[in-house]
Length: 141
Image (tube, rainbow, N blue to C red; front, side, top):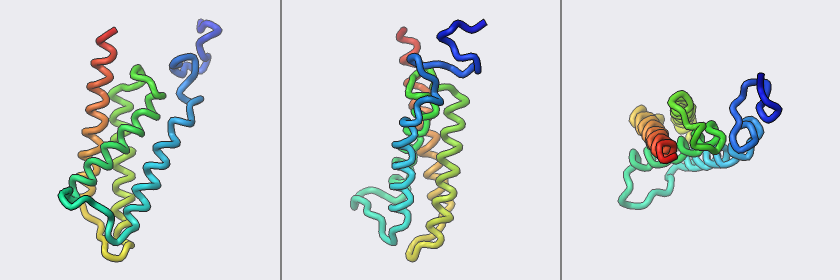
């Protein structure tokens, strides 16, 4: 029998609030997605001279995956699980695929499977780093 402090629905609680009650965690995710969409709509996206297109994709999608994982985890290290990491990487890679389709309609841009691979690699690397860090944080207790 759950105590009065525990939700009856079985949802996990973090710091007295359920993940579902933290919609503000998704705001940075949506802003980041909008920024990617805007940059993808440019014929010549702004890149520093020494940064390759593939590294830019990898870094951008690693950051996107970190924000997505943070939202899925409810902003708590305890919420960073392998399943949520897979979900975050999948969602971000799926957004990368939609972004490549978007670029196919932008003058001067093309849909590129190598860019999608860089997006997926960045997403996977970002969530893997967060998962490892979460394990370290939990083992410190």
